[in-house]
Length: 454
Image (cartoon, rainbow, N blue to C red; front, side, top):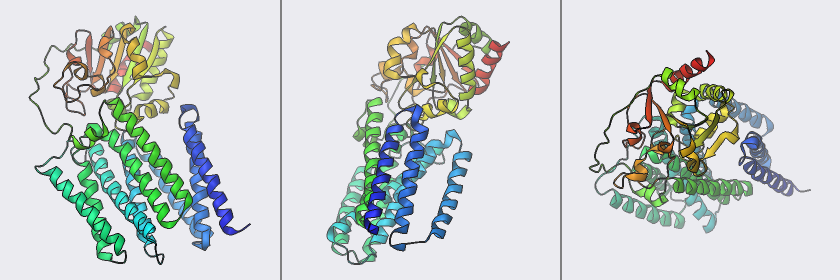
């Protein structure tokens, strides 16, 4: 068997592992093993690629595995769950810059065809904009830069001119790939394009942006695969690009917005003259909340980013078990864009070993909300804001929400009356059936657990 045939057969095996791994990721019961299967496929592909044409020997491969393994283990152990969205953004950026370097390196592989030059151009362009766009997304998610949209006069005109310059330079580069000055200009323009594409987008839209950047990183990898004629890179990049686009579409539907609206509307940048939501707040203590929960027959928990910040998922699981022991039926209502990345709440609750069959999607829980005795909102804001349903002048009007205000009693756990990530006031806080339980969510739920335990 020839060396080339063996390598291609190994690539096929790796591609099969990728596909099976993605399939297993669709179910929480098999997601962990699916991640491991995909990782094994990637390990196999990398090792075989490095051995191809004796690029490196086993010693360098082993060294790379050790260094990468240590970095990965440290990231898995040390990065807090609240920082997981930022880490995903950084990973997208690393994928983009890696594809840019692969495309750059392909220029030095000898005589390149016109098709190869075009794929090199695409890998550099998409990889560069993914890298800087992901850095901006990281900054907004980590709040090292303000999450608000950055809009300036003539921004769309500037972006149009920037896109025109990229096309012109790209054509010139494809005609003269040996011109290093054109290469450097192309890289700089791709970096600038990534920045300009993400800064006008508000923090509330970052879950969609993360999904889109994930797709971009896959497309960049696919283009790089064509540039170096590597089949497994083409397959892996195509899978990532396709799944990222599918997830982006799901997120947009969950927000009742088009992708174009997310990318170009500058959500939250224009503050309309909205009437400030006012009313009487009805605080409640853990002691009083306990008596209501103790008599409840059905309880729904609606988690949000505040639960991640407070790291309250484990104590919420304790409360769930105590409520069930008391005879209550407990479920969790999950909004597709709750948190700051797709599936954020699912990951948090899975970490606390909450049974997945208790997690109910928004469209399934809403018809049952009127029958719920108590809805406990933990750190969620925009995804339960009735303004999305009732106030036509609200920036979030039309976004599907979890109708917690239809429950008989609503407990809202928050540190203060501050608006959510979208910066929109929430009339739920002043509802007749709403009680505000102020303080750290972990401490507040812990107090309820102690009441039940005693």
